[in-house]
Image 1 (cartoon, rainbow, N blue to C red):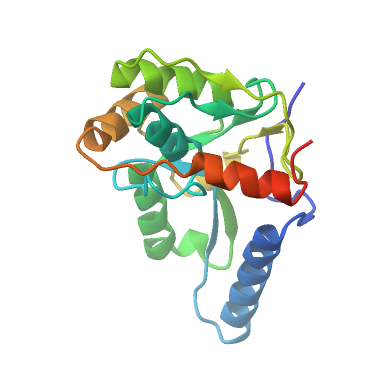
Image 2 (spheres, rainbow, N blue to C red; image 1 turned 180 degrees about the vertical axis):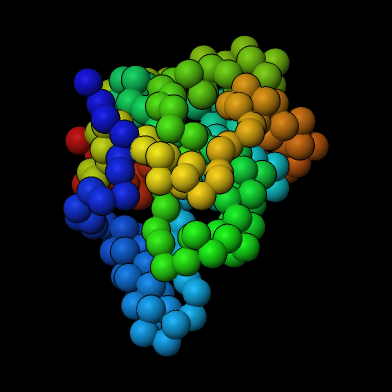
Length: 204
């Protein structure tokens, strides 16, 4: 059984990317508290939505899958597709950011920003395929990428206490993403990115 990630979970950075996030948060809060500059750290979970870069193979699952589907290619899913993530619409991210800037209750705090709902990666791929009206099928790689976690979703109780609650459900959010994405050019670079992972022996 998976459990939501709380803000007080020990921060164990397992990648350069994670280290930069951890260090930026700690540095910002430290400077803010030292000089009494109201500062807030928001920990965004899996953000998606219109105007997301569809041609960047590192943007996130929704954009990567969209790019594959638009190019009539099967979305490639690592592991068995049942690993879960917390997908939050970009408009909810905006709302959370505005709240953090305008509420004194957020000052010097750090908050998860997610929906609190785990969603299987395979489910997201299948939903996007349906919304694009495509006939491709997800390709399950049955490979593991070094550093990936099996399940990751937010405990949102802390940010709820200062007044935030996401408004956009996944079904509505993906529909908005696809409506925008249908007219956008998407250069699929997934295969090239995956070859780089293989070359560096980061897939098992």
